Amino acid sequence: MNNSMVEAAVGAFVIAIATGFFIFMYSLGGLGGPASGYQVNATFGSVKGISVGTDVRMAGIKIGSVVGQTLDRETYRANIVMDVDSTVKLPDDTTAKIGSESLLGGNFVELSPGGSETMIEPGGEIAFTQDPIDIFGLVSQFVLGSNKKSENGSSDGGDAGSGAQQEEPPAEGTSAQ
Image 1 (cartoon, rainbow, N blue to C red):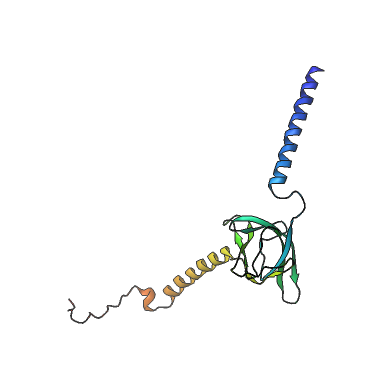
Image 2: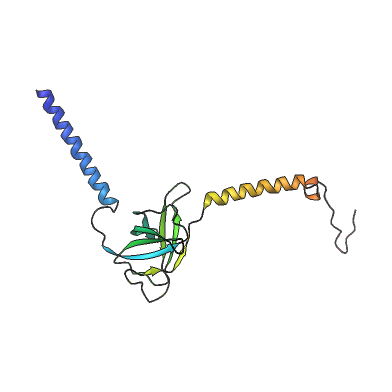
């Protein structure tokens, strides 16, 4: 019976530590508590990699999160709704773009304030947006483009792939030797 009491005490200790860890991570992750900000909208051609809960950052600091996303069925553009910290006022010429943590990291919405003195009202819209850059598409286009050049250079029979070099005429005042 003494052995089972020790096992129960160790089990309770482990559960208490795990519960404390989850509470700490929940509050650290910004998931706990109700939103304390105002909402703004932004429309993009694509919101690839953005979902509800994605960070909204300014100067690399989290100032909010994405709380909704919809497709405009008339323009086929993506609209996202962001909850921004109420202490951060956004000028009406603020720019929103979708950034990437790294090549393998997740995406986030980066806000860059403009210089206007007029602020976006709650429920307002950020007019200036930039779609995400498709890094893998650019790399594959570069690789495929390089392959096409090498194929064209060797198969067209022209001077570019034949190895023949043309000499340039000598500059004035010099002699060709």
